[in-house]
Image (tube, rainbow, N blue to C red; front, side, top):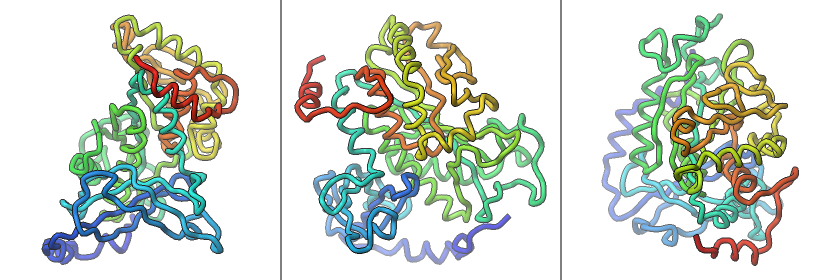
Length: 384
């Protein structure tokens, strides 16, 4: 199993320097989504004070021609801070700063899906949509081979690995627990973790988060995961089907509720939402992975606890359906539902925006509706 050279550096020597006082200066690491729609980039600057709010943080810029986001002849892109987290790597008072990306002319970059998601979330804010997303991922060596797997073969069949305990059943728990603690320190709304069905595959859950917070917290949790893995010399992949054959893929199951579904009798609103989703299956499939369904087509085969990418289905406690109603929700008659279609490498802004457009804004058809500023303001100002 090959690990990165950087992980072999003496971390004790690093700690000697990390303990040095930094006066009144603060390190702010700006983080953004690059031109792939999946990769994350970061760079750090020094501030003369500890920022207490987004308004305290200056805009910044970067070379978009090196991130797949612009041409070299006009390469400056703007970084617009949108959310602050504590820095679990350099510790307080240092910060991690999630940013939106704007082009030179202040229009949104192609992979800045937060921009339109925020507008939709503002329109539906009176329904208080809550989301919880279950991020599956797989640990690899830097050679691309699953961590802990035999170098020239395969582990035993799936069965003992899901929520497993023991050195012959789980691989990489140190990484998982380090990531969990780092997220808690940072202020990420991480709510749980478990070993998954395929060996060296794990899951963490983020939420419940309301509105735009879902995408913000999941992207930061992903950044922290990649950064923790860097220290261990291991790679975390969000590929939805990292191993072909009789192995489970990786998804990002999305749990959804609103004021209406959470109240007594909310099951009828859940059923109405499922009916709307059933009529817009292909639109959601396009929105649920960065390549418009190409990645998910390797995963959504109807096998390995997935539904078919070509068919919409729903059921109580059915993990082979597009939409699962948890059994407890069926018994209580209210609560939430789970969309099992999003791929592990989905953009949570795209997933949650699509869900709100269909379920609350009652959009139909294959394309999202463009709303005027006046319409958005009217909806956002509407009273409960």
